[in-house]
Length: 264
Image (cartoon, rainbow, N blue to C red; front, top):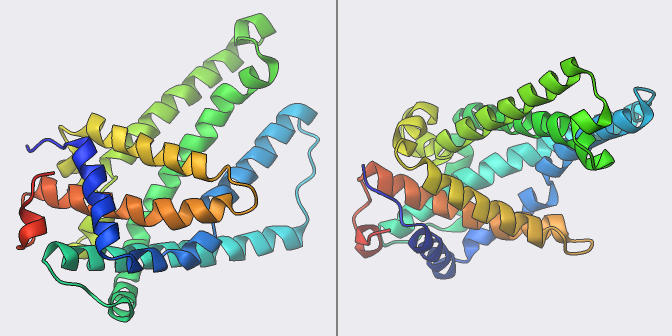
């Protein structure tokens, strides 16, 4: 199984974005609908406020919930569409040609129905990770003490440990299905099984790349007012470019062309 070279993968991703900056245009609309922040906000509201107020937290107004759901659905669709179009454009770049923005959008839209399935699976894993980590760690963060020092009942300690273990499992699965998007768009399947096989033997390298993009997103999102938008606009195309390069590398079936022949 070929091994990834982390730094070269990041550098080649950056070079491809320089070669075709229109990739960034695909992520303008998804960046306006930061779906991840919506999920994090709701989990934070219900759990953190519930922890502070011991279950007395009132739910948000119904109109706010409905608007948030609509906002999430629209953003989720745009993100899947942008990813599909970007994968097709990057594939053409690896062949030594360029796909126009209009063609990428049209061809990408045809891939959306199939890509929705694995993307929802990946989203479910992400929600599981965030929720389990919050249950396991937030009470200790608020109090600044370990569960034993807080005098927490043994059953609660066991629950938090179980949630911590669940987070680790979720993280492992998230990395193993990291390449589902390019596999789904370029192959006649949902990509989950393909990604699971390809990542074998390269989990830690994929995890390092996952951390790099996560750190980039966290840093950029701290920009006042437009942080989440900038994060989606910059990290989105950068991340999907790296995924497709990794996919080609691990498949050992790169498209013809000078770029495709280079080693990662």
